[in-house]
Amino acid sequence: MKPVRLLHVIHSYSWGGLELYSTELIIKLQATHVDQWVICFADSRIAKELKAAGVRTIETTGKKISKLNEAGLIRGAIRKHAITHLHSHTRKDMWATCLARWFNKDLKHVYNLYMNALPKQDFVHRALFRRVDALCSSSEDILKDVKKNFPIDSSKLKLIRYGRETDKFVATPDLRQQIRDKYSVQKDQMVIGTLCRIDAGKGVRELVESLDYLPDEDLKKVQIWVIGDRTIVGHNDQGETTYEPESQALYDWMLARAQSDRLKGHLHHISFQREYIPYIDALDVFTLASYNETYSLSVIDAMMMGKAVIGTNAGGTPEQVGGTERGILAEPRSGQSLADCIRYYLMHPDKAQKHGEKGREWALHNHNWPNTLKHFTELYQKL
Image (cartoon, rainbow, N blue to C red; front, side, top):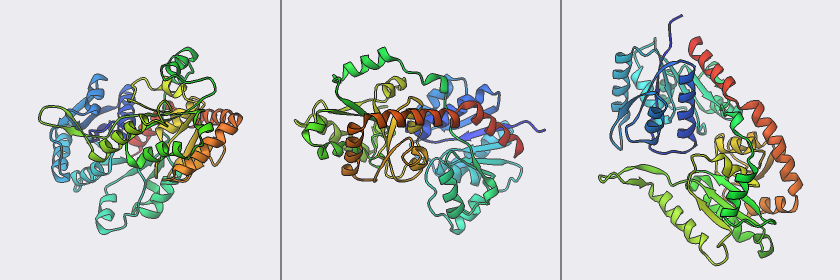
């Protein structure tokens, strides 16, 4: 059998769930001795993490790169390294990868879909998806949408669940208490936290606004932690990080609300933590208020730590929450609905514990690296 020589394509300056997971997947594949390279931006967090792990990178410069120019870079890497398989991780990179292999039928192209499958039935997308040999997603619901909305044969759709290092998700009571003490959490307070980019689509504004709908007696019993950073778009000429304007504005608004008379001590922003598991452990309930989340890694990680989840009734989150088995669902874009969910767990802490136990059981069974890596390596060989 011809050996697999794999080229990943992922151009992003951000460091959210998509980038974090793609990077971890590539690093894990390295340990299986897959022969691989990665095209990415030179000064991105992705490049730094991959290089530190000994993964071979092909680094491109420039804040923006056209699909045609990116396709040319991919073609150059294919020739130089005798690439047999391409693996794209964003929609933009999928376009460029399809263009790069346009006249090469021998190359195989795997596309990881992390986002929602909106209708793409036009002539251009029909031509592009003929150049995709396998479309992978962690979500059954997303693959159902792909069947309906994408011009791609259903035989090419592959359910490969996200892998997680299950042995890392262990409670540390002393560290949990240290973190809670740092934010002056009282014994009768419930900490409800999210782990996401500071982005409007993540429902950060509505989560903050949910506190406005809580009466004072309930507010006293609640802290909300927003753990994450602004969306990075690149670096300026002085090498300073630049942020998406909407993300920066939301961040500034959130910090101002955290210092308001009513919310001070009840709303905290915490920068993204490289060692984030203890911070999830320090929560009582996890929430992700996204408008239309595809299939959230942070929800999986929260479940691994036995946390009940307040999600939104949109995207892949209902699949993860399992109706009311592992959490409860709020309506998207509604601070009032989120507040109702918070009050439910305040009144029924036993339900939060039960939902957390069910979530951990489900996450451990469905999301582990041995199964994920086995499915990807077998897919490469089968193609």
